[in-house]
Length: 116
Image (cartoon, rainbow, N blue to C red):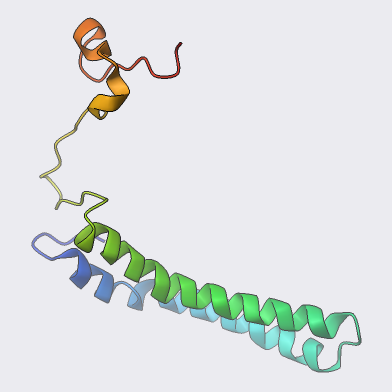
């Protein structure tokens, strides 16, 4: 989702409403289907179902909470990932430490790393 003029944290705050419905619906349906089998499934199925239920609930929390928080941290706070509104992106070549002077010989964006 890209909206001109909005900050990344505002977009992430709006995001969980859209993917939360199918994520929660599918995973809650899976958990609901495993509960009867976990309660009366026998010695093999009970522990397996409990592990699957915990895994589904953990994956839901990671998808809807942890990933958006990490995205905001890496884009806004640490600035490890460059994010710009649509239309303001300028393509850049590889970092200088990866070019080994190849740009001077072969043109901009050329690299010789891995060719030796």
